[in-house]
Amino acid sequence: MIRIEPRQDSGPLLRYGVPVLSAVVALALAAIPLASAGANVVTAYGEMFSGVFGSIFAFSEMLTRATPLIFTGLAAAVAFRARLWNIGAEGQLYLGAMAAIAVGTGLFDIPGIFLLPLIILCGAAAGAAGMALPTFLRTRFGADEVVTTLLLNFIILIFLQMMLEGPIKDPMGLGWPQSPPILDQGMLPTLIDRMRVHSGLVLAIVAAVIAQFMLVRSVWGFRLRAVGENASAARHAGIGVNRLLFSVAIVSGALAGLAGVSEVAGLKGYLTADLSPGFGYTGIVVAMLAGLSPAGVVLSALFIASVFVGADSMSRAMGVSSYLADLVVSMSLLCVLVGGFFARFRIVRTRVSAGGA
Image (cartoon, rainbow, N blue to C red; front, side):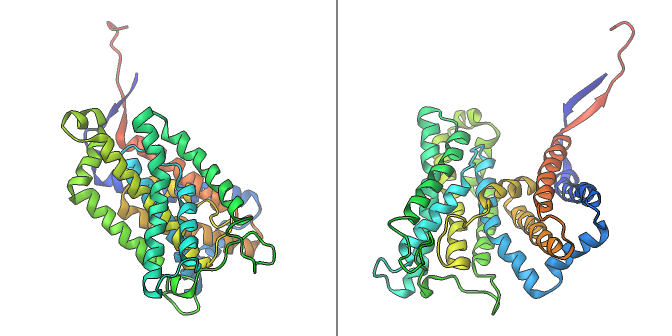
């Protein structure tokens, strides 16, 4: 007879080993369709590695891709730790980007020294507002935030497309649906000359450090973990669950909004409807792969970014579809879920006595 029972203590080996093993297994499984496509697996993975670490430019591109993933991964990790299921980071990212455009394109007379801090602040506030509404609907009416945050993504994107075809359309954009550019003094400085990696990466790492400290060392983090473990018990212990969820929503949405700020004010300089190739959704994979640890989110985002950038390089060098990156990311999430199950539970085989039969 086979019985599944919870482990008393997962131990650090299981907690930290599962994400690493999941990434390795995902790469191994991805080798199967790669080989079936007729590619040499060793050469293909060599091209992926070279496409990320083969030059300073390649490495900087990986860091550039990782920056918004750190923000959206943190947004998901913080919310999920409180069992507040934020699936709307994609929409919150666009809200942050729209706020950055509204402030940074010269519509308001703002001194240059205050422009960039105000862009960052307004972008974070817009993202926070995008998560505050679904949280209010949950706490006040019991609405499922998975549904409301997911649907808001589409509403926000449609609203953005309407704005890009109307009020914020660049008159100098030759008819393309894009916003006017952000003023130079409102752009995030680059970290390396003639490279695209910008100081949004520093901001993301600082946010991860602060989030890790707040979750592990602060009273707020203790209350958040308590609500995530058992909201009823936390409420019985005197914790204001609804108030805590609102604070978590504000932090989570603000982090997602900063992802939009980093992309539009750090990389592109103007806003289009295809600013994000799904950073908000990929951030969920980043958070899960990191075990909802803010510190782990940084490493997880670097891995996911390496897969995407490396797959692009491999595709150009060998003619293999770059969709292999999506396959590796999907397999990584699947392996994390399976590994997480075995980290929390164990399978016990017992014998059934003849008398019990």
